[in-house]
Length: 358
Image 1 (cartoon, one colour):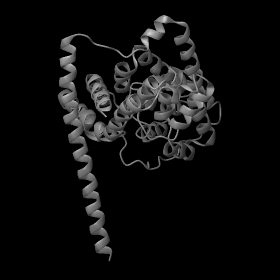
Image 2: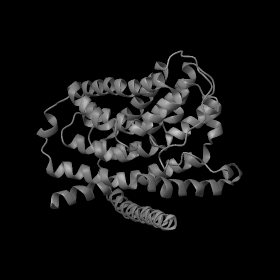
Image 3: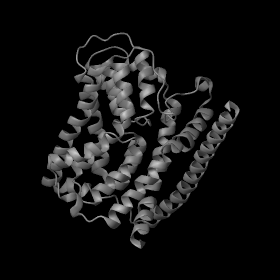
Image 4: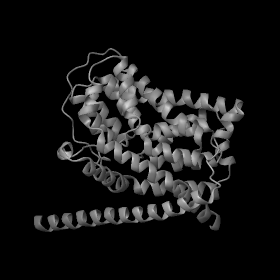
């Protein structure tokens, strides 16, 4: 148990400054990049628009839940199915917040490979939609997710001053966004620490770097309801336990980009062909990228060294990490309190409604 606590604290302290930095950048993007600007660049058809949609979606701080209403809103504004699917894949698979914590927990190589693989899988999925007749976009259905990671921006945002937008971005990232992922972020860190402390490496290494390992990671990731940032500690736990880097990459691409709720909404709004392209682009491309990553790591000393977790020996950075960990712990505590308060309020309102009905 002592080793478990130590591993958890070590992971928490190491990831804290990068999480705070990622959330900060995510807040700025949310505040200063409007939906109207995205719509302007994703209108029209063709490979160029598909590629542009992937690059626009990659840095945005939206999870697989929040990206659905955002993408369907863009679709209703005139974006093609190709661009919509490309945006749907790229956005939840990576983001500025997840890249920073990937760098801390999985090393610089994975922090570079992950967004590149996400963009490739998004473009592939968009192209796979093909030349099917692009019917007029259907009205956006209400998402089954109650909290959509900031998928909608308030109408008055355009009237805000620069300082007000800045503060709005900070509220989005450190309150709303954190409320949406705080539980899964903690679960991910606890899981990674548990894997390090209790699970022998032979449990996961039995599959090696085979396609079977890729399939297992895809089966674990596809139905999960988890964002790119919260999936990173879980992926780190798999890597520490001996799962190959390529199989870990499969999990990090498939997990955030797909879940059962998203699959159902995409099929209803964009059609079966778009859904097939969506899933094929994510899974098939993640397998190919995973295979190439394993091949690179096994044949390159540079790549193998770059897979190692980023270590900071300087005392000033360690002090910064400690301060960041304290700040993050306070933010998480406040987030859990807000979520519990909302849950209690909803239960109370439901009880009162039931009593009134009786």
